Length: 178
Image 1 (cartoon, helix red, strand yellow):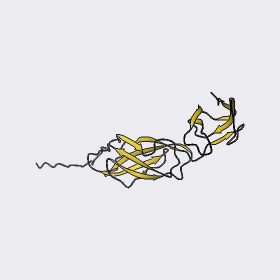
Image 2 (cartoon, one colour; image 1 turned 90 degrees about the vertical axis):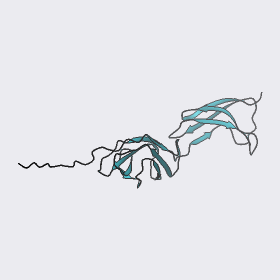
Image 3 (tube, helix red, strand yellow; image 1 turned 180 degrees about the horizontal axis):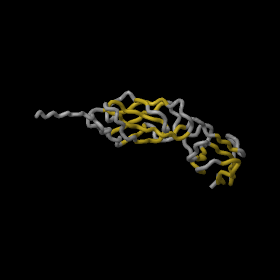
């Protein structure tokens, strides 16, 4: 009686690890047309075929990199205003997809709209002055109202601050003298 053994190779079914970190070179609201995305900590029991990214849950795209730690430049010129979620994952040579890790990118290309309605540039003022105006930005986080002395101030002093848009509102009462 002859005994035969049939070995069947099932291949690698273990996906690459999830990145331990994903970060950006620009961590706050900005209007840059390019950002650098960094990742680290991806491992695989065989080898990494590609690092991929997705924007806001869209299709996966290769970074053209295949290392467990690295970076690549992403063109953001076509991104809309606001927050975007960037996901990073790895795929190995057996087409096993690793779990992704996300990072937020904040695009802000619109300049704030600011108007002081009751004072003019270089106007002499004294005493107690109410300052009225409007402040609007689609992605407002904080605004500050500052003054400087003369036509070309070398320093500025804050007299009011806020965290929301205002329309034709009293921004502050400014005590100019004393």
